[in-house]
Length: 247
Image 1 (tube, one colour):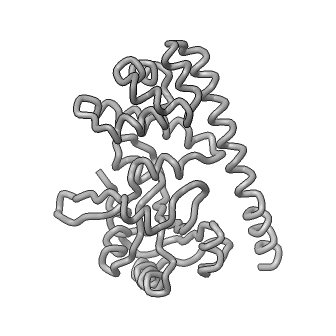
Image 2 (cartoon, rainbow, N blue to C red):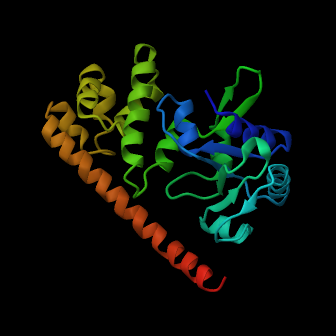
Image 3 (cartoon, helix red, strand yellow):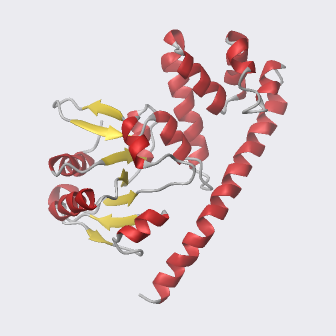
């Protein structure tokens, strides 16, 4: 169940017709991989009209910027997150973070086209990143994100395996992080998996049913993604430090 303060934020976004996609911990909850989070994270479109709608939604939430960078389009388009704190009585203290660009993640237009729409018990709906896009966005240097990626993928696998589509199978071969499940997948769909070994070489270990080598290769894959994320954020962090010193 989505807590009422978060519903209040989602309602404001919907009322003001903001093109925003829920991501982060609250999106993980929607996909069946629970994560406790006091924040609400959105990917947003940075068109002038949409930023105007977002400002109206945030004004309705009595939200204020709580850190650098300021709420300016140039920082969003560079990949920074802008952080707000809500003071509306129904969402008091809730933090809202917005971004428009993430490492390795498609453009907002593509994210919007692939989005998932969830209907709430009251009939209202909200939009969130598709599961593949959420997994991609979670590939960061933060320790907490990698266990969450694994849980997201395991939940999807166990929910959909009985009626798996070709796209599901490709997704699991490309992204699963659980050695036993990758080995089971290789046994069940050898032809599909072998076509993907050029894209993800560690699948060779799945076909050889070698969980130890597979776990080691998955760790190396994670380390490479973490380092890529660190390098991506290094200049952005330097810019944040400069903004803090000149604030």
